[in-house]
Image (cartoon, rainbow, N blue to C red; front, side, top):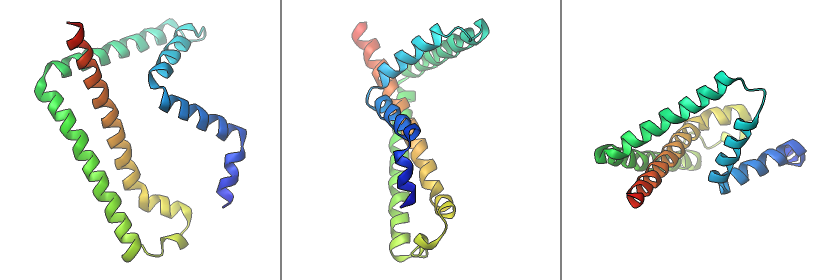
Length: 148
């Protein structure tokens, strides 16, 4: 239970609160980040140009993707496939811990537990990233349809 004492640290509290705010208000966080990056004086002009070019490239890729219904369907299918794969992984790990060879996983060192559980965490990160990307594509596609 000593790891819970880390939650009393001010840096942990601040980082968790910022993470929670960015999770609850993602668009406002992106706008605030863009404002900060545009106002920061220590960034050189080259860095600002690279940020602008990268944003432009992403927007170009998004528009190219939403113009193709097959690509949009592929992105949606990929999201649900990763979700199902994540659910299968979670279920199999629960079964392995409950009745299988991972029954005594609690006695192993924490780092080994994280290593054993890392495929599930990696798959979760892939699924969440794909889900957010697909949500963004659908939102942009709906905006383009309603504006036209």
